[in-house]
Image (cartoon, rainbow, N blue to C red; front, side, top):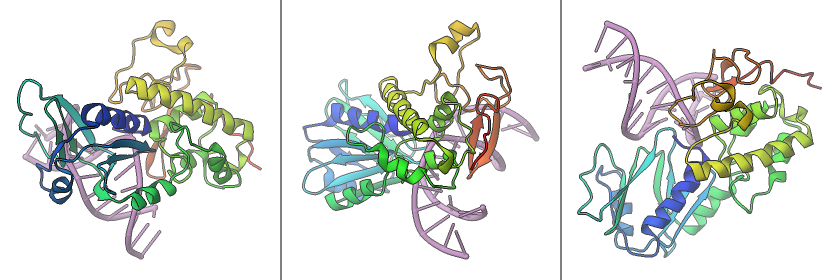
Length: 276
DNA sequence: CCGGCATGGCAAA
DNA sequence: TTGCCCTGCCGGA
């Protein structure tokens, strides 16, 4: 479910629900019993996101490091009217106070770590467009000169943190860039524009809780077409629209597996160009 | 009921 | 590059 915008949103949501007061922690599924026991009754002191990594701080050099992977997710609910409901399915971690509860299921990572380990995780990540301290030049240095495709580079969390398959496809479409273009053929001005756009798009995604990338002039209302309903919930140009018409030029959107992920693009709006 | 699929990432070869 | 992990959902038998 999650690209970086969701993780940042979850940091805020956890902080809102549990910040600054003691929280009960448990692992109904039984796979995080020791960690839950250790933080049980402690106060949630901080909730931070870097890229797709979520860190819940419980003081005393103790962080819960969460990475949702492909299918992980949080469910929030209220306990104001009574006890939290019995966990449904496999709940790795439940957090709970007298007002709220949150269930974490299916994470790739859910582990108790130290300050130093948290810093090490952040250190292996590229700049996150959602963080004020991000340095886009660090990403540019890895892109320029690279023979790897720009599509693969955008998904590489060491290059750029928080961008996933949807933002990757959409930002390349919005800038008319062929996904197969090698990083070394990307122009500096193109990178600057891509980064600036990611900052805007992802920030909007945090607020909306979904990914919308379609410009006003191409929206369903403006184009006289039905709005698109899909798992990720937003209006997009190419992501998972293979075989459908491009919203701008009506060419069939193409898809291809690229580094074991599905890539989507419009061959007309994102034409190949000579690569030096 | 089962198989396939998904907005991810790791280790191993 | 491949295989594997994590879970829920949906479509076809």
